[in-house]
Image (cartoon, rainbow, N blue to C red; front, side):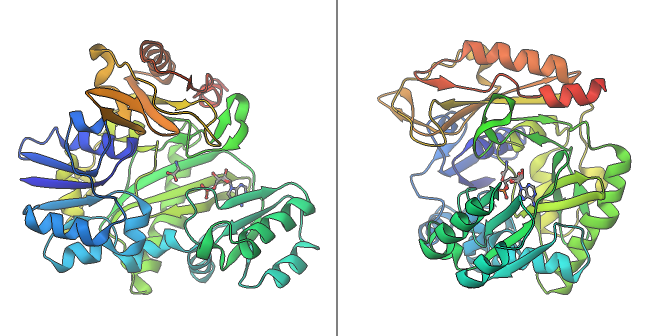
Length: 422
Ligand code: AMP
Ligand code: GLY
């Protein structure tokens, strides 16, 4: 069997490593993959956003199954294109991917179907948004409607910051057309939980919960990033909370999408905040999270391809998705300066003894050498009986990996450990 994975980050590396456990797969193509993924898959230099070339490649190479991992090609409709030429896929079609592609859509969906989320207003006109902000509560959260490389959310601590956010998104078009509309919403507080789920539109089966660390620096300081580390499970996500989320958020969301004629099939990511008034949705993603995937999939005991194909065929069952009772921790090693400016081109050394636990994100191969080529360079994941041991092992492995200008947070998992002790 030939499987194609679209994307080229640490998340895709984790998906590929997990798929490789299935011995019916002879070939895995990664489009475009990266220098580290090249050890585990056949990398093909086609951008994840080049829908036409990807579809042509899949047809020419008789790909049996495709996994579309990143948001852009999903929102642009790659799954529809591949399905049209007869290639079954894991991932939502364009109509369903809008749940991440438009925040205005997802907020209106939640309002219509009474799914708990922050109070909000939407605007397609900067003047009205600016007028609204003059009387809104502060802090206030300003969000670009469309995809913005994870940078479209601004938490404004002052009215001035809120005004600047509206102006840069709607007037200066910092995120292009993604900023034609905005959502302005209530600022919520509470622990955050990421819950990735498999859904075939009939059943929704949550994966093990996780916790991301979005800020660049220790103690949650510094700029927002794509994620500097993750742990799973998330100690705040108790069985009781899980039950409440299933009843008030997960099932209602799947049903809402069905009612709207936008049946979601794939991995639906629920970004949740556990507020004093109960769990609320901060965001939906139409895909696996990065770097959540790097802690969630190593804990999956079941075969990933079997689950994915069951989702495609609408035959998903709870029994198919079994997780280990262990814990996992992933520490992201980045180029110093990320997410702002950083240098690249440094050689990366990954000793063989830790290679299995490394998920490469931003690296390229040049003359047989692995060189840094991005902000987030790689993630190191450890699985152990408890979180404390997983964190210890992950940091020990981090010490063994090296490259110029390497930077990582030292406090991944500390908040989770504290929650476990309390
Ligand atoms: P996103 O880019 O959508 O992942 O959002 C980035 C981060 O902004 C989230 O992980 C939250 O920490 C924060 N955030 C988003 N919306 C809100 C909100 N309404 N209240 C508080 N924090 C928020
Ligand atoms: N880690 C957050 C995301 O994948 O959007």
